[in-house]
Amino acid sequence: MVSFFIFLLLVAVTSAAASSDYSERLLLRPLPQSALLASFNFRSNESSASFEHQNFRYFPRSLGQILQHAHTKELHLRFSLGRWDADSWGQRPWDGTREGGTGVELWAWVDASSEEEAFSRWLTLTNALSGLFCASLNFIDGTKTIRPVMTFHPEGHHHNSSNLHLLHGTLPHEVVCTENLTPFVKLLPCKGKAGISSLLDGHKLFDASWQTMSIDVRPICAGDGSDCALEIEQNVDMVLDMDRSKRPRDNPIPRPAPIEEIACDASKPYNAEDTCYPLDKGEEPDWSLTDVFGKPIRGACPLTNSDGDGSETVCINVPPERSVQVNTKGSYVESKHAEDTMRCYQLPTGDDFDLMLPSQKMTTGLVRSQPPLTAARSINGHGQERGSIQAVITNPSLTEYVEFVYLESLPWFMKPYLHTLRARVSTSTENPVVETYYRPAVDRLRGTHLELLLRIPPVSTLTLTYDFDKAILRYTEYPPDANRGFDVAPAVIRLVSPQSQHSSRGTYLRTTSLLLPLPTPDFSMPYNVIILTSTVMALAFGNVFNLLVRRLVGADEMDAFGPRGIKGKLTGRLQRLMRAFKGKGGKAE
Image 1: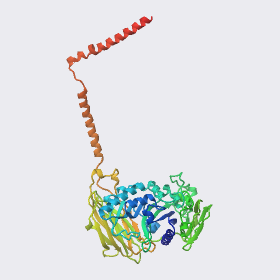
Image 2 (image 1 turned 120 degrees about the horizontal axis):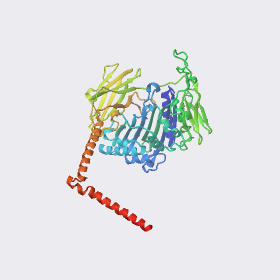
Image 3 (image 1 turned 120 degrees about the vertical axis):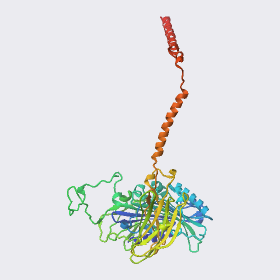
Image 4 (image 1 turned 60 degrees about the vertical axis):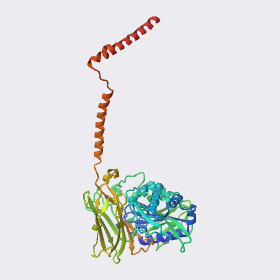
């Protein structure tokens, strides 16, 4: 059901984009363990002529001028947090094409006549996007930039691709927060005031178990290339815990319900008045948009298409027997697709819209599709000198070989040894490595770039390992939290075959990021040295200053400064004052 859900989503959104300059769509998919997948999609088109003359209608001017200045023909930007649980949630939304690694990930095709010019324009692009999205994209320098060869392909129509240069950069340590969501929403035509964007709230988005925000800009042309347009697509995907999301905002600390309100499983041997194991009722929980997002949809965005496929703004993927209720004062239209498993709604204009699903016991239950690949990556070894990377990739298919590209972008202080690269398949002795691209790192100039084309037999597990050394940094290169470790960007995997049946963009997945401990000096020693040096300097300065300003006299010269000197002068002045006072008093009498 999930695969068909994604396919229907892509077909519907594509048809909506073709019939209007702006379309938006929200798709809701209940997941196991009281989770909810919410996928927001916003798409705008702008003709190439209007874009060149800076006559922007739906395309955001702030982003368009940056792309023009940096000569960027295609852009892909990702902000991601959390981990997609493929074992529980199944296949990734959009087949992973709108998903990024943990932190910030950016890749773009830049028009330039040489690699040096392309890198210069790439730095211009990252610095401008850093200010636009309030992110640390300006830290993507030469050490965090690679030029992928096999992993990424342009999604747009580029008729003159000889001068296009692909550059890719990541910031796995970047913390995505509300400062990034606010400029993201401001790029939308309705800017969170109406339409499905009114549900985007930082308290809900960044409380999700997994979330990603993506921006994709690409040229779209007709068959002969005469009629071209620039398309921007913005997506927000999140997996919400419905029990956690329904908690009132004035009760931020989750407190368990009283035991008398919990249905307990009395068959457990430890069941007692003060011990309870919650009873699984086998029912789907009740929820509504207001419960999950904290507010209903504030009516339809007036800029969306009012007829055709673009009118179906909100869709929910549930079994046919699932009850769905609508709460709104305005007029809406409900339509059903794919044997009643997909229900779509046309939003009313100017009135709130809310979907409510009561608690109900299901007969079919939720069905999740199997992901084409599963991947896990970790750092092995111990000590501060060397270590190893291990990636475990599994092909669950029973009949098909899977061919994929494996990309790793490592920081320069990780020095891998290519001769230690080992790829082993659990069910075969053949070498799974088909092609290798390796660009070694240069200290403080660029990182390591490794791309592998691999092939796995059905029902097999591929284990990829290699050793590396850890470099010692200069003390000025350590961050303030050096003992936490250094983040290593996730590996990117792109399926080459079999091709995805639901997306022409392919299938992607990313592993989790890694935390690399490096040899770290004792930063308390400089503090101790500073304190000791300051103490010695204070003592020395005090003594020298005392010797310079204090006047030293001999013992035989003390009479001039003794009682007959200073004391005599003070006594004389005091006697004169007393006489003057008495004289004034006598005249007054």
